[in-house]
Length: 111
Image (cartoon, rainbow, N blue to C red; front, side):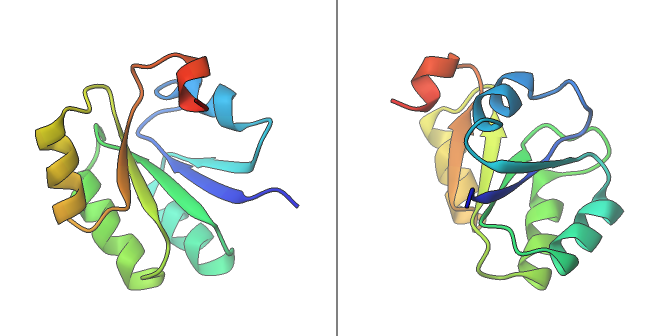
């Protein structure tokens, strides 16, 4: 059985590398709408959620807060193009599980 992963991004093409990398290894659900995200979280048992740091219609902190209200134990990993130490500390302080830099290559995601 593959892990169930929810990928929340602001648009379909935003995190193509991460989607391409994860798809062979997980059961991936990709969502761009906050309302649909809340419904999916309430109706499914996900093992982890990836959330884009750069959201067009909202803020990753707002998404994290909504997730915590629905499933306080779900690990949320924020995905960012940057991913420096200060950004990592900010994400952890906000209650996310980790920060993943999307600027790496496909190979580096699994090393």
